[in-house]
Image (cartoon, rainbow, N blue to C red; front, side, top):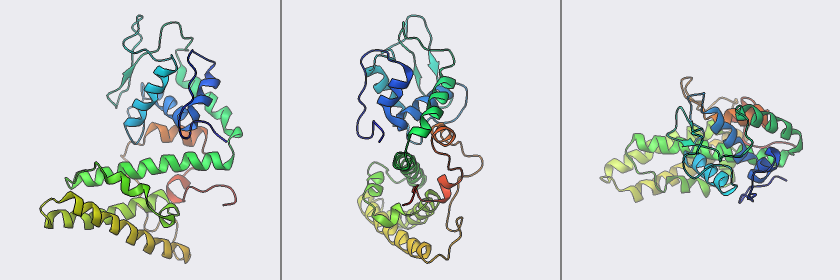
Length: 258
């Protein structure tokens, strides 16, 4: 099984790259590779901006990333996110660290079993769904502070849906919640209560249709607009650790015989 699911067990001094990646676990290892790619590709590192900040805290604790600007002035900056960082002087980092991280992650893939890959897929999918919900609520000027908590307590029906279908459920549910928000003069507590009910109701309805076998993969499935900038972390995961292609959007995060 993989490391780093609940917490990162970091090493105090600069280790071999493989050892540090194992201590981070696949999720944050993908985030690190995405962070390095963000130097040259204008796209978000992850669906949730907090992931990159957490990663940098982990790398600082590992003695790899400097607290402030490094003395040699080797500052890295993301083209899309407002993030900058530098590695400590004396760490043996290649100028093309992104390529090394990609190579190391690709070599790691055969060592991950289906449970490991499924866990990574679910982590990415959950954050994509949460980010999409936040974007929908902000569009209606509804506060998002407690919104993602709703998704953490959803039942099995929710977990059986693909990410594309979860996006459909959230879109249709937020429409109902927005009506409540307007009719109550902006009562966010009442709005989120309605949102939770709508998500559960629509998820159950869609899971029943799905179980009947009457739906095609792309029915009731909202895929991102072609102009949408996919988080680099998803690109890294699909390229290096999750050879699932369009299943990322069109299938529930289940691998193996499950």
